[in-house]
Length: 116
Image (cartoon, rainbow, N blue to C red; front, side, top):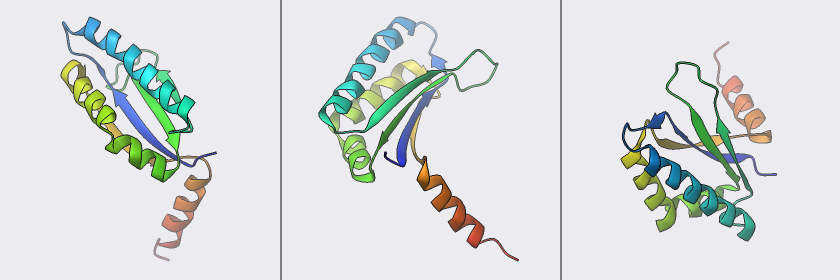
């Protein structure tokens, strides 16, 4: 299983653009499902958070090897989806991250750099 991920999150739709967000959510989900079916990414999850008064209300977590994620985020389709999202979502953004075994590797590196 891949130890690397792309985290794409958002706050909420821009008022008046909720229907656009609804449609794009379905299109983006299908885009990621196609990447998963083709083996371009390992997997993805969608998480919708319970209302909590914060500014993070949902995210997609896309898993893959570094080369898979590099290719995905460099693709025209990904760039178009992310650009579209910024036109109808508040707080939309994507960032790379570590999961599973890579967390232990990064924590060991961090711990090894701490002063005595």
